[in-house]
Image 1 (cartoon, rainbow over the protein chains, first blue to last red):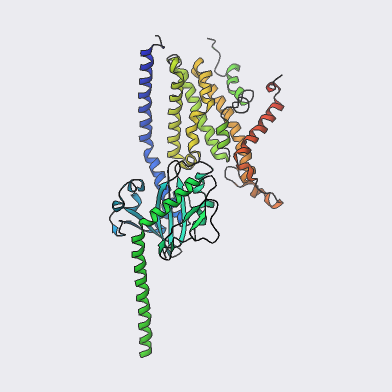
Image 2 (image 1 turned 30 degrees about the vertical axis):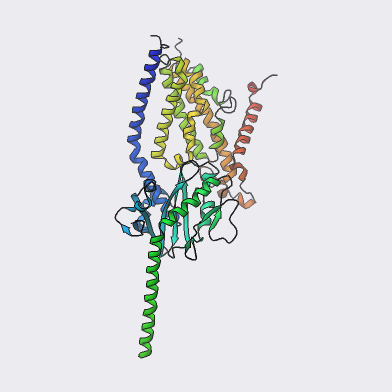
Length: 254
Length: 214
Protein backbone atom coordinates (compact mmCIF):
# COMPACT_ATOMS: atom_id res chain seq x y z
CA UNK A 1 0.00 0.00 0.00
CA UNK A 2 1.22 3.48 -0.77
CA UNK A 3 1.53 5.26 2.57
CA UNK A 4 2.06 8.59 0.90
CA UNK A 5 -1.30 8.80 -0.85
CA UNK A 6 -3.42 11.76 0.24
CA UNK A 7 -6.39 9.59 1.15
CA UNK A 8 -4.18 7.33 3.27
CA UNK A 9 -2.62 10.31 5.04
CA UNK A 10 -6.03 11.75 5.91
CA UNK A 11 -7.33 8.38 7.03
CA UNK A 12 -4.28 7.74 9.18
CA UNK A 13 -4.58 11.14 10.84
CA UNK A 14 -8.29 10.69 11.52
CA UNK A 15 -7.94 7.23 13.06
CA UNK A 16 -4.96 8.33 15.13
CA UNK A 17 -6.86 11.29 16.57
CA UNK A 18 -9.90 9.16 17.49
CA UNK A 19 -7.79 6.47 19.18
CA UNK A 20 -5.82 9.06 21.14
CA UNK A 21 -8.94 10.94 22.20
CA UNK A 22 -10.59 7.75 23.48
CA UNK A 23 -7.47 6.75 25.36
CA UNK A 24 -7.04 10.11 27.04
CA UNK A 25 -10.66 10.54 28.05
CA UNK A 26 -10.67 7.05 29.57
CA UNK A 27 -7.57 7.89 31.59
CA UNK A 28 -8.99 11.23 32.71
CA UNK A 29 -12.22 9.65 33.91
CA UNK A 30 -10.47 6.81 35.72
CA UNK A 31 -8.04 9.09 37.56
CA UNK A 32 -10.50 11.86 38.36
CA UNK A 33 -11.51 10.60 41.86
CA UNK A 34 -7.87 10.46 43.02
CA UNK A 35 -7.16 13.93 41.66
CA UNK A 36 -10.29 15.46 43.21
CA UNK A 37 -9.37 14.01 46.58
CA UNK A 38 -5.92 15.63 46.39
CA UNK A 39 -7.47 18.99 45.52
CA UNK A 40 -9.95 18.72 48.38
CA UNK A 41 -7.26 17.86 50.90
CA UNK A 42 -5.10 20.66 49.64
CA UNK A 43 -7.91 23.13 50.30
CA UNK A 44 -8.15 21.91 53.89
CA UNK A 45 -4.38 22.16 54.15
CA UNK A 46 -4.44 25.74 52.86
CA UNK A 47 -7.22 26.79 55.21
CA UNK A 48 -5.28 25.41 58.17
CA UNK A 49 -2.09 26.99 56.96
CA UNK A 50 -3.75 30.44 56.94
CA UNK A 51 -4.16 30.12 60.70
CA UNK A 52 -0.57 29.03 61.13
CA UNK A 53 -1.02 25.27 61.19
CA UNK A 54 1.33 23.74 58.68
CA UNK A 55 0.84 20.02 58.27
CA UNK A 56 0.82 17.61 55.37
CA UNK A 57 -2.26 16.81 53.33
CA UNK A 58 -3.22 13.53 54.97
CA UNK A 59 -2.98 15.05 58.46
CA UNK A 60 -4.94 18.09 57.31
CA UNK A 61 -7.88 15.81 56.66
CA UNK A 62 -7.85 14.68 60.32
CA UNK A 63 -6.96 18.01 61.91
CA UNK A 64 -9.36 20.16 59.89
CA UNK A 65 -12.48 19.51 62.04
CA UNK A 66 -10.39 20.02 65.19
CA UNK A 67 -9.59 23.63 64.33
CA UNK A 68 -12.32 24.76 61.96
CA UNK A 69 -15.40 25.12 64.12
CA UNK A 70 -17.90 26.75 61.80
CA UNK A 71 -18.48 27.00 58.08
CA UNK A 72 -20.91 29.70 57.02
CA UNK A 73 -22.39 30.75 53.73
CA UNK A 74 -23.35 34.43 53.55
CA UNK A 75 -25.21 36.53 51.06
CA UNK A 76 -24.26 40.08 50.04
CA UNK A 77 -26.17 41.52 53.00
CA UNK A 78 -24.09 39.50 55.43
CA UNK A 79 -26.95 37.19 56.29
CA UNK A 80 -26.40 33.50 56.75
CA UNK A 81 -27.93 31.36 54.03
CA UNK A 82 -28.15 27.64 53.44
CA UNK A 83 -25.29 25.86 51.75
CA UNK A 84 -22.02 24.08 52.33
CA UNK A 85 -19.24 26.65 52.51
CA UNK A 86 -16.51 24.15 51.74
CA UNK A 87 -18.09 23.13 48.44
CA UNK A 88 -18.57 26.64 47.08
CA UNK A 89 -16.55 27.18 43.94
CA UNK A 90 -15.41 30.81 43.95
CA UNK A 91 -14.60 30.61 40.27
CA UNK A 92 -18.31 30.19 39.56
CA UNK A 93 -19.43 32.69 42.22
CA UNK A 94 -17.21 35.44 40.86
CA UNK A 95 -18.94 35.24 37.50
CA UNK A 96 -22.29 35.98 39.11
CA UNK A 97 -23.73 39.37 39.91
CA UNK A 98 -22.52 40.71 43.27
CA UNK A 99 -25.99 40.49 44.78
CA UNK A 100 -26.33 36.84 43.87
CA UNK A 101 -22.97 35.57 45.08
CA UNK A 102 -22.70 33.14 47.97
CA UNK A 103 -19.82 34.04 50.24
CA UNK A 104 -18.12 31.21 52.13
CA UNK A 105 -16.61 31.94 55.53
CA UNK A 106 -14.72 29.63 57.86
CA UNK A 107 -14.40 30.25 61.57
CA UNK A 108 -11.57 28.50 63.33
CA UNK A 109 -10.28 28.40 66.86
CA UNK A 110 -6.58 28.30 67.57
CA UNK A 111 -5.26 28.82 71.10
CA UNK A 112 -8.80 29.55 72.27
CA UNK A 113 -9.10 32.54 69.95
CA UNK A 114 -11.43 32.90 67.01
CA UNK A 115 -10.22 33.49 63.47
CA UNK A 116 -12.37 34.41 60.51
CA UNK A 117 -11.01 32.82 57.35
CA UNK A 118 -12.04 34.35 54.04
CA UNK A 119 -11.38 32.49 50.79
CA UNK A 120 -9.88 34.63 48.03
CA UNK A 121 -9.81 34.36 44.28
CA UNK A 122 -8.60 36.77 41.65
CA UNK A 123 -6.57 37.25 38.52
CA UNK A 124 -2.81 36.98 38.23
CA UNK A 125 -0.77 37.52 35.11
CA UNK A 126 -1.36 34.20 33.32
CA UNK A 127 -4.30 32.74 35.16
CA UNK A 128 -6.23 32.59 38.40
CA UNK A 129 -4.66 33.20 41.79
CA UNK A 130 -6.35 32.26 45.05
CA UNK A 131 -5.76 31.96 48.74
CA UNK A 132 -7.15 32.39 52.22
CA UNK A 133 -6.81 35.30 54.62
CA UNK A 134 -7.46 34.78 58.33
CA UNK A 135 -8.56 37.74 60.46
CA UNK A 136 -8.35 37.88 64.24
CA UNK A 137 -11.53 38.19 66.29
CA UNK A 138 -11.43 42.02 66.07
CA UNK A 139 -12.02 41.52 62.31
CA UNK A 140 -9.24 43.98 61.61
CA UNK A 141 -5.87 42.44 62.32
CA UNK A 142 -4.65 39.78 59.90
CA UNK A 143 -3.79 36.50 61.58
CA UNK A 144 -2.24 34.91 58.52
CA UNK A 145 -2.57 34.48 54.78
CA UNK A 146 -1.80 31.87 52.14
CA UNK A 147 -1.77 32.29 48.41
CA UNK A 148 -1.46 30.00 45.45
CA UNK A 149 -1.68 30.26 41.70
CA UNK A 150 -2.24 28.21 38.62
CA UNK A 151 0.58 29.23 36.34
CA UNK A 152 2.34 32.44 37.35
CA UNK A 153 5.90 32.91 36.10
CA UNK A 154 8.24 30.60 38.04
CA UNK A 155 10.67 32.57 40.19
CA UNK A 156 8.64 35.78 39.82
CA UNK A 157 4.86 35.87 40.28
CA UNK A 158 4.88 32.22 41.32
CA UNK A 159 6.66 33.23 44.52
CA UNK A 160 3.38 34.43 46.06
CA UNK A 161 2.99 30.99 47.60
CA UNK A 162 6.28 31.27 49.47
CA UNK A 163 6.45 32.15 53.14
CA UNK A 164 8.63 35.23 52.59
CA UNK A 165 5.70 36.78 50.76
CA UNK A 166 2.90 35.42 52.95
CA UNK A 167 4.38 35.96 56.41
CA UNK A 168 4.47 39.80 56.37
CA UNK A 169 0.67 39.83 56.07
CA UNK A 170 0.29 38.69 59.69
CA UNK A 171 -0.24 41.61 62.02
CA UNK A 172 -1.30 44.07 59.31
CA UNK A 173 -4.72 45.66 59.62
CA UNK A 174 -7.41 46.02 56.99
CA UNK A 175 -9.41 48.94 58.48
CA UNK A 176 -8.37 52.52 59.19
CA UNK A 177 -10.90 54.51 61.24
CA UNK A 178 -13.64 52.12 60.24
CA UNK A 179 -12.93 52.36 56.51
CA UNK A 180 -11.72 49.33 54.56
CA UNK A 181 -8.23 50.04 53.24
CA UNK A 182 -7.31 46.36 52.73
CA UNK A 183 -3.67 45.47 52.25
CA UNK A 184 -1.69 46.56 49.24
CA UNK A 185 1.24 44.75 47.75
CA UNK A 186 3.65 47.56 47.01
CA UNK A 187 6.18 47.51 44.19
CA UNK A 188 9.63 48.48 45.42
CA UNK A 189 8.81 47.64 49.03
CA UNK A 190 6.24 48.75 51.57
CA UNK A 191 7.00 51.92 53.57
CA UNK A 192 8.18 51.01 57.07
CA UNK A 193 5.44 51.01 59.66
CA UNK A 194 2.64 51.01 57.08
CA UNK A 195 -0.08 48.81 58.52
CA UNK A 196 -1.80 48.34 55.15
CA UNK A 197 1.08 47.36 52.87
CA UNK A 198 3.50 44.50 52.28
CA UNK A 199 6.52 44.17 49.98
CA UNK A 200 5.83 43.21 46.38
CA UNK A 201 7.93 40.77 44.37
CA UNK A 202 10.52 42.18 41.98
CA UNK A 203 9.54 41.20 38.46
CA UNK A 204 6.15 40.02 39.61
CA UNK A 205 4.29 43.32 39.61
CA UNK A 206 1.19 42.20 37.77
CA UNK A 207 0.76 39.20 40.05
CA UNK A 208 1.38 41.46 43.08
CA UNK A 209 -1.26 43.92 41.87
CA UNK A 210 -3.57 40.95 41.33
CA UNK A 211 -3.15 40.02 44.99
CA UNK A 212 -3.97 43.61 46.09
CA UNK A 213 -7.08 43.74 43.90
CA UNK A 214 -8.21 40.30 44.99
CA UNK A 215 -7.88 41.20 48.69
CA UNK A 216 -9.79 44.46 48.34
CA UNK A 217 -12.54 42.98 46.19
CA UNK A 218 -13.12 39.93 48.38
CA UNK A 219 -12.88 41.75 51.72
CA UNK A 220 -15.30 44.45 50.60
CA UNK A 221 -17.89 41.75 49.91
CA UNK A 222 -17.84 40.80 53.59
CA UNK A 223 -18.29 44.35 54.93
CA UNK A 224 -22.00 43.95 55.82
CA UNK A 225 -21.17 40.81 57.78
CA UNK A 226 -18.25 42.51 59.52
CA UNK A 227 -20.38 45.44 60.69
CA UNK A 228 -23.04 43.04 61.90
CA UNK A 229 -20.54 41.05 63.97
CA UNK A 230 -18.92 44.24 65.24
CA UNK A 231 -22.20 45.72 66.43
CA UNK A 232 -23.03 42.41 68.10
CA UNK A 233 -19.67 42.52 69.82
CA UNK A 234 -20.26 46.11 70.98
CA UNK A 235 -23.65 45.12 72.31
CA UNK A 236 -22.06 42.31 74.23
CA UNK A 237 -19.49 44.69 75.64
CA UNK A 238 -22.21 47.18 76.64
CA UNK A 239 -24.27 44.44 78.24
CA UNK A 240 -21.29 43.23 80.22
CA UNK A 241 -20.56 46.86 81.23
CA UNK A 242 -24.12 47.23 82.47
CA UNK A 243 -23.78 43.90 84.25
CA UNK A 244 -20.69 45.03 86.11
CA UNK A 245 -22.37 48.35 86.98
CA UNK A 246 -25.38 46.49 88.30
CA UNK A 247 -23.34 44.13 90.44
CA UNK A 248 -21.32 47.15 91.60
CA UNK A 249 -24.54 48.89 92.64
CA UNK A 250 -25.83 45.76 94.28
CA UNK A 251 -22.71 45.57 96.36
CA UNK A 252 -23.06 49.25 97.32
CA UNK A 253 -26.65 48.76 98.40
CA UNK A 254 -25.70 45.76 100.46
CA UNK B 1 18.21 -8.75 9.12
CA UNK B 2 20.79 -10.30 11.41
CA UNK B 3 19.36 -12.30 14.26
CA UNK B 4 21.55 -11.22 17.13
CA UNK B 5 20.47 -11.83 20.70
CA UNK B 6 18.61 -9.15 22.61
CA UNK B 7 21.67 -8.20 24.63
CA UNK B 8 24.29 -8.58 21.94
CA UNK B 9 27.25 -6.24 21.94
CA UNK B 10 25.52 -4.00 19.42
CA UNK B 11 22.40 -3.77 21.55
CA UNK B 12 24.40 -3.14 24.69
CA UNK B 13 25.98 -0.23 22.88
CA UNK B 14 22.49 1.23 22.46
CA UNK B 15 22.23 1.32 26.22
CA UNK B 16 25.76 2.38 27.13
CA UNK B 17 26.57 4.81 24.35
CA UNK B 18 24.18 7.59 25.50
CA UNK B 19 25.56 7.33 29.02
CA UNK B 20 28.95 8.62 28.00
CA UNK B 21 30.17 8.92 24.40
CA UNK B 22 26.87 10.16 23.07
CA UNK B 23 25.20 11.66 26.12
CA UNK B 24 22.15 13.71 25.11
CA UNK B 25 22.93 16.54 27.52
CA UNK B 26 26.70 16.79 27.79
CA UNK B 27 27.61 15.73 24.25
CA UNK B 28 24.60 16.53 22.09
CA UNK B 29 23.57 19.42 24.35
CA UNK B 30 19.86 18.63 24.01
CA UNK B 31 17.19 19.03 26.66
CA UNK B 32 19.22 21.64 28.49
CA UNK B 33 16.15 23.75 29.33
CA UNK B 34 14.63 21.16 31.65
CA UNK B 35 18.05 20.28 33.04
CA UNK B 36 18.40 23.85 34.27
CA UNK B 37 14.87 24.24 35.55
CA UNK B 38 14.22 21.22 37.72
CA UNK B 39 17.57 20.40 39.25
CA UNK B 40 17.29 22.54 42.38
CA UNK B 41 16.33 19.45 44.36
CA UNK B 42 16.91 15.75 43.84
CA UNK B 43 13.30 14.68 44.14
CA UNK B 44 11.84 16.54 41.13
CA UNK B 45 14.95 15.63 39.15
CA UNK B 46 14.40 11.94 39.82
CA UNK B 47 10.71 12.21 38.95
CA UNK B 48 11.50 14.12 35.77
CA UNK B 49 14.09 11.51 34.81
CA UNK B 50 11.56 8.73 35.39
CA UNK B 51 8.86 10.56 33.44
CA UNK B 52 11.19 11.06 30.49
CA UNK B 53 12.21 7.41 30.77
CA UNK B 54 8.62 6.27 30.46
CA UNK B 55 7.70 8.72 27.73
CA UNK B 56 10.82 8.20 25.62
CA UNK B 57 10.93 4.41 25.75
CA UNK B 58 7.23 3.96 25.12
CA UNK B 59 7.18 6.60 22.37
CA UNK B 60 10.16 4.93 20.74
CA UNK B 61 8.41 1.55 20.75
CA UNK B 62 5.09 2.96 19.51
CA UNK B 63 6.66 4.91 16.68
CA UNK B 64 8.87 1.99 15.78
CA UNK B 65 5.83 -0.32 15.57
CA UNK B 66 4.10 2.15 13.29
CA UNK B 67 7.19 3.12 11.31
CA UNK B 68 5.99 1.48 8.11
CA UNK B 69 2.49 2.91 8.40
CA UNK B 70 3.33 6.52 9.21
CA UNK B 71 2.90 8.74 6.14
CA UNK B 72 6.23 10.53 5.87
CA UNK B 73 4.63 13.91 5.18
CA UNK B 74 2.94 14.04 8.55
CA UNK B 75 5.48 12.07 10.55
CA UNK B 76 6.52 14.96 12.81
CA UNK B 77 2.86 15.58 13.65
CA UNK B 78 2.46 11.89 14.45
CA UNK B 79 5.52 12.04 16.74
CA UNK B 80 4.08 15.02 18.56
CA UNK B 81 0.69 13.34 18.99
CA UNK B 82 2.34 10.19 20.38
CA UNK B 83 4.59 12.18 22.74
CA UNK B 84 1.81 14.52 23.84
CA UNK B 85 -0.52 11.63 24.60
CA UNK B 86 2.09 9.92 26.73
CA UNK B 87 2.97 13.16 28.51
CA UNK B 88 -0.65 13.87 29.35
CA UNK B 89 -0.99 10.33 30.69
CA UNK B 90 2.13 10.76 32.85
CA UNK B 91 0.86 14.14 34.05
CA UNK B 92 -2.54 12.72 34.99
CA UNK B 93 -0.96 9.85 36.88
CA UNK B 94 1.36 12.21 38.76
CA UNK B 95 -1.58 14.45 39.66
CA UNK B 96 -3.48 11.46 41.02
CA UNK B 97 -0.74 9.76 42.99
CA UNK B 98 2.15 12.17 43.69
CA UNK B 99 0.33 15.49 43.82
CA UNK B 100 3.12 17.49 45.50
CA UNK B 101 5.64 16.47 42.91
CA UNK B 102 3.25 17.24 40.07
CA UNK B 103 2.72 20.73 41.52
CA UNK B 104 6.44 21.25 41.74
CA UNK B 105 7.06 20.08 38.20
CA UNK B 106 3.96 21.97 36.98
CA UNK B 107 4.77 23.24 33.51
CA UNK B 108 7.87 21.13 33.08
CA UNK B 109 5.92 17.90 32.67
CA UNK B 110 4.16 19.55 29.76
CA UNK B 111 7.54 20.64 28.50
CA UNK B 112 8.61 17.02 28.03
CA UNK B 113 6.64 17.34 24.79
CA UNK B 114 9.12 19.87 23.52
CA UNK B 115 12.16 18.04 24.85
CA UNK B 116 14.31 17.76 21.76
CA UNK B 117 15.84 14.50 22.96
CA UNK B 118 12.55 12.70 22.44
CA UNK B 119 11.68 14.09 19.02
CA UNK B 120 15.30 13.56 18.02
CA UNK B 121 15.33 9.88 18.99
CA UNK B 122 12.00 9.21 17.26
CA UNK B 123 13.16 10.76 14.00
CA UNK B 124 16.71 9.43 14.07
CA UNK B 125 16.23 6.00 15.55
CA UNK B 126 12.69 4.71 16.02
CA UNK B 127 11.67 5.44 12.41
CA UNK B 128 14.43 3.17 11.12
CA UNK B 129 14.71 0.38 13.69
CA UNK B 130 12.59 -2.48 15.07
CA UNK B 131 10.75 -2.03 18.39
CA UNK B 132 13.20 -4.01 20.55
CA UNK B 133 16.14 -1.88 19.52
CA UNK B 134 14.07 1.28 19.73
CA UNK B 135 13.12 0.38 23.30
CA UNK B 136 16.77 -0.08 24.27
CA UNK B 137 17.66 3.18 22.56
CA UNK B 138 14.91 4.94 24.51
CA UNK B 139 16.10 3.45 27.78
CA UNK B 140 19.71 4.33 27.06
CA UNK B 141 19.00 7.91 26.12
CA UNK B 142 16.74 8.54 29.08
CA UNK B 143 19.36 7.04 31.40
CA UNK B 144 21.91 9.36 29.84
CA UNK B 145 19.58 12.29 30.36
CA UNK B 146 18.51 11.22 33.84
CA UNK B 147 21.99 10.57 35.15
CA UNK B 148 23.12 14.09 34.30
CA UNK B 149 19.93 15.52 35.84
CA UNK B 150 20.53 13.59 39.04
CA UNK B 151 24.22 14.48 39.27
CA UNK B 152 23.46 18.18 38.79
CA UNK B 153 20.57 18.07 41.28
CA UNK B 154 22.77 16.21 43.79
CA UNK B 155 25.32 19.00 43.89
CA UNK B 156 22.80 21.82 43.72
CA UNK B 157 20.68 20.49 46.58
CA UNK B 158 23.68 19.50 48.70
CA UNK B 159 25.57 22.77 48.32
CA UNK B 160 22.57 25.06 47.95
CA UNK B 161 20.23 23.79 50.64
CA UNK B 162 22.43 21.38 52.62
CA UNK B 163 19.96 18.55 52.12
CA UNK B 164 19.68 15.45 49.96
CA UNK B 165 16.22 14.30 49.00
CA UNK B 166 14.97 16.62 51.73
CA UNK B 167 17.17 15.02 54.39
CA UNK B 168 19.41 17.55 56.18
CA UNK B 169 22.73 15.82 55.49
CA UNK B 170 25.08 18.69 56.26
CA UNK B 171 23.31 19.47 59.51
CA UNK B 172 23.59 15.85 60.65
CA UNK B 173 27.27 15.78 59.71
CA UNK B 174 27.81 18.91 61.76
CA UNK B 175 29.35 20.84 58.88
CA UNK B 176 27.58 24.06 59.92
CA UNK B 177 29.34 23.97 63.26
CA UNK B 178 32.61 24.34 61.37
CA UNK B 179 31.40 27.64 59.94
CA UNK B 180 30.00 26.43 56.59
CA UNK B 181 27.03 28.24 55.11
CA UNK B 182 24.68 27.18 52.31
CA UNK B 183 25.62 28.63 48.96
CA UNK B 184 22.46 30.42 47.81
CA UNK B 185 23.92 30.76 44.30
CA UNK B 186 23.55 27.02 43.74
CA UNK B 187 19.77 27.38 43.89
CA UNK B 188 19.73 29.87 41.00
CA UNK B 189 19.50 28.70 37.36
CA UNK B 190 22.93 30.02 36.27
CA UNK B 191 24.66 27.58 38.60
CA UNK B 192 22.89 24.70 36.88
CA UNK B 193 24.46 25.80 33.62
CA UNK B 194 27.87 26.08 35.29
CA UNK B 195 27.46 22.65 36.90
CA UNK B 196 26.58 21.14 33.51
CA UNK B 197 29.60 22.97 32.10
CA UNK B 198 31.89 21.48 34.73
CA UNK B 199 30.46 18.02 33.96
CA UNK B 200 31.17 18.47 30.24
CA UNK B 201 34.70 19.62 31.05
CA UNK B 202 35.32 16.63 33.31
CA UNK B 203 33.85 14.22 30.78
CA UNK B 204 35.98 15.54 27.94
CA UNK B 205 39.12 15.50 30.04
CA UNK B 206 38.47 11.84 30.78
CA UNK B 207 37.06 10.64 27.46
CA UNK B 208 39.57 11.42 24.71
CA UNK B 209 37.12 10.34 21.97
CA UNK B 210 35.13 13.48 22.55
CA UNK B 211 37.94 15.90 21.82
CA UNK B 212 37.57 17.40 18.35
CA UNK B 213 40.76 17.68 16.31
CA UNK B 214 40.80 21.02 14.61
